[in-house]
Structures are given as structure tokens and as C-alpha cells.
Image (cartoon, rainbow, N blue to C red; front, side, top):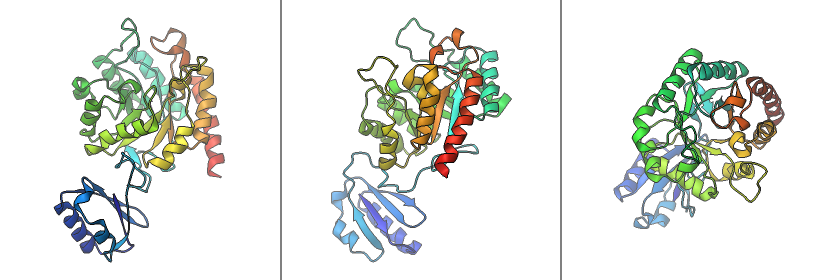
Length: 334
């Protein structure tokens, strides 16, 4: 349930209404936009006479939200959310590129890639320290040592870091990680979602392998229900019957999510296609579709990468892509 207030409502009257609603056992989420204030009511709204609220002088209208997701719903929060990572802004027209290797392999590797992607214009450095792999015999990442190397690369370049956490027990290691990624396989790990919801730092939530947009948004809701509203959604391709690409990149999801939610939406063309030569065209298509950013795998030696070398761009390829993305963004803005 949302209550839209009239413009220029005195603060005292607004607080009186909020106190009365909370006194009836509901929580109130206040969203202040440029032209209106929206009160999101959370809880059993049958406790309140909504006709009474709608008749109040300061209330413009009352709308029911039938969708099961509330906090991430654009009806609940009409203005775009902007997630900040240091000085970097993600969302509401602010385009962000996260780039780096699938996995951190060595100090020289991550440092070299970090300097390369920064020089090309990347905003954040991505790198996997804990790696979920389909086979138990594949490289699982350097774990805590990998995070240490990522932080060293951050110190050397100034780039904030993004890395995936796979379980609650590992969360203490991520206190000094700028953006915590929840991967596709953990999109419905509800206890982990609730745990990162208590951390009050940006969370990059990837869509599951075969999950609907409603399920995706409900996973974001789990994080936000714990008080953390710094959520970035990532479309990374879904599993379909096609077997020419690793997954099927659902760019229609970007436009649909834009209607449904106020959260920033980025795209991962690397995991979506699994083929390096397909990453640039899909990255440009994502930018043209209105995505708020990209997360792209870049490796200084893809042929010898310990993880996902086939989908990783070389630094020079990434630099060329960044130039083309700039032109796409200029066209969109025109």
C-alpha cells in the first residue's frame, strides 16, 4: 500500500500521519521525490481504514500494490535509486563499468589487469576470490588470499573492488570489499540475502540461471527488507534450449525491470554469452537498451586463465569496447 501526499505538505502534518500509521502496527517507508512524497506502508494494511486516509486533507491518493515485492517496486519508490560506491554513482543515467578477471590468480595478474581496465575507463575492479564451479575439481579461487590481492590492486589503482561471496560464514572477510556480489547460484540463498541486507553496503545481485523477473525482484526484496537499499540488479543471461551460447542474454529484462523497479540495472555480457567475440556487441546492445552499466571479464592472458578464459576480453579489446560504448552513450543522450 502506498500513500501519495500532496505537494508542499507541512512537515508537522506529515509526521503526525506517519506516527498514526505506525501506531497501528505498520512500518512506513518515506520516499521523497522532486515533486511528491510517497509513504510506503509495510505490514497488515487491513488494520487501517484506507478510505479514512484517502479522505485526509494532505493525501492526494492511496494505491494498493498487488505485486509481492514492495520495497523494490517503482510504485513504492517512484524516483530512481542511485547507488554510490565512493564517488561513483550507479543508476539514474549514471553509467558504470565494472571490469576485471573472472578469478584472482596472482598479484601480478590482478595488478596488471587493474591498471589496464582503469586506463581504459573502468569505474570498478571485479575479481573472484571465491569461485562457484560446476565441477568440484575446477579451480575454486584463492579465497581469503584472493581478497587480499584485490585490496592490494585497489590500493595501487584507486579502483573500488567487486567480489562474490558464496556463504554467510565468509561474510566477515568482505567487510572491506566495496561491493559484494551475490552470484546467480545464490540468488535464492535467502539466509545469505538476509545477512547481506544487514551489512549496509552495495550489493550486486545477479539473476539466477532460470529465474523469472518476479523471483529476481523478490530476492532483492529479501535484502531490502533487512534495511539495505543499496542493491544493484544484474541481468547475466538465463538458461534456455539454445546451445550455441553459454546462456541467453535477456535484454528485454532491462526494459521490463525499468518499469517494475527503481533499482539500478546492469548487464553481464561475459557470462551471458560465454564467448569473448560476442561480448562487445552484447555490451553495446545493453547500453542501447538503457542499462545502468556493465560488468565485463578482462584477462591479460585469456588462453592460460584458470577460469572462464573463453569469455574474457584482452585489455586492448576492452579499451576498444570502451571507446565504442562512449559513442553509444552519446547517441542515447542526444
